[in-house]
Amino acid sequence: MTLRRLELSIERLSKSGDGVAEVAGRAVFVPGTVPGDRVLAEVFEQGKAVRGEVLEVLSPGPGRRSPICPLADRCGGCDWMHLTEDTQHEHKRHIVVSALEHLGGLGPDAYELLPFVFSPMPYNSRRRAVLHPVKGRLGFFGKRSHTHVEVDLCPALTPPLESLPGELADALGTALKDVDEVHLLEVGGQISFALMAKGALRPKHREAAQALIRDELVSGVVLVPGAGKGAPELHGAAVLEDDGVLYRPDAFAQANADVNRPLVEHAVAALEAGPDDSVLELYSGNGNFTFPLAAAAASVLAVESSTVSLGLAQQGARKLGFTNIRFVEGDCEKFAKGLVKESKRFDRILLDPPRTGAPGIGEWASRLLAARVVYVACDPAALARDAADLVAHGFVPRTVRLFDLFPQTRHIEVVMSFSREGAGGARPSS
Ligand SMILES: C[S@@+](CC[C@H](N)C(=O)[O-])C[C@H]1O[C@@H](n2cnc3c(N)ncnc32)[C@H](O)[C@@H]1O
Image 1 (tube, rainbow, N blue to C red):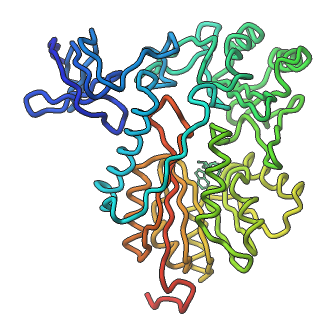
Image 2 (image 1 turned 30 degrees about the vertical axis):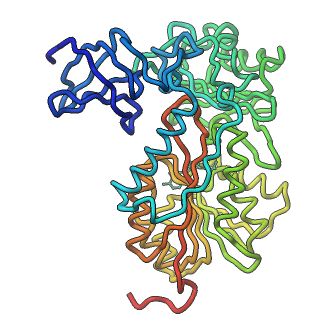
Image 3 (image 1 turned 135 degrees about the vertical axis):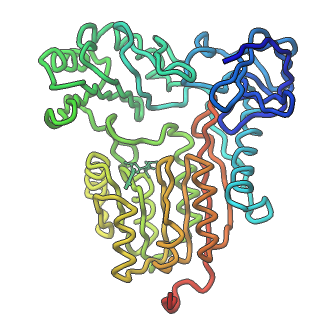
């Protein structure tokens, strides 16, 4: 690793959110910078990449501002707090359009880019967070590191959660000692959190949970023992509810409630499922999309691998009185292959995979004869690869829409819709 001190002009942002300068034809990745910045940086080689660490901002680019959080330069939670919202939006748009073009072979003329849905709250918008014990306190991962940064107050979290990291650390005290992670969740003003123990649950974990509920710091707690050490224990009101959808802190939840509503509305509308249509929903979680889909379509087959999420979805469906949803616990890829083998067909497919995407989606969707596919993506690169696969199997891109579920970060949620003309007719011979 050779160190050099250089003045750099930041030209663009990389897809991982770092500023990029060119030096002797090589890209230098400089975290914490914005296009237009002129900085003095320590430049070094790291593996095949060249990186820079800012020593001084000599002249700021037009999109730069002072972060409101004093931990912004160290904490890994928010990597774009030093960018104005307009700049964040412009670059998120660029990241998605460029991934679709360069990884998916789909230029901007191949689809309609619908208006960006911004978060009404640029701060105080995240309703869930994963914290780690750090020297008796709680913290997030540091920037580009596996060390933790102690956090007492976090302006990215919703108001009920904002000061909870410090308050929980005070209240949990020594109960934090045998804990791997603490998962926070806020729904409709109520707080539930999960304590993920390293091994078996201990009396001190139960006593701490009960005390926090009694003192009304939280509504409920899920105590999750380490692998092979028993089942999770629910204390107080650990399951929270919003509009019939049930949530637990040890299961997935979309991070921004205000943006989740238009996200669900748009994805369901884009699927254009009518009262005679059968829907296959992959990666269905706690039923976030499942219930509005079931209200619009004849039937929904919802597939999800997490026992906890699936249980919440089944409970929610019963409470809401849906009788046209079939739930399956399992791996989506294996299950979809099985459906293809059985020559099943579906009019519509909605999928919301994790960052790894849904390898094989083109094959399944075409063999299942779906006329519409709506893909909800948290990783633009995975979306671009899967979109190319869908196109290779005869699907035509229709719309792309961005939802800012994660303000102050480089992350972006995208909904892309596809149609396949002639689908729903005779089964193709191959
Ligand atoms: C991005 S979340 C979406 C959940 C839900 N659609 C929502 O809006 O809350 C992805 C979901 O896929 C599930 N999952 C991850 N890998 C899976 C797999 N191979 N098969 C089935 N489900 C999987 C996760 O448990 C998680 O609930």
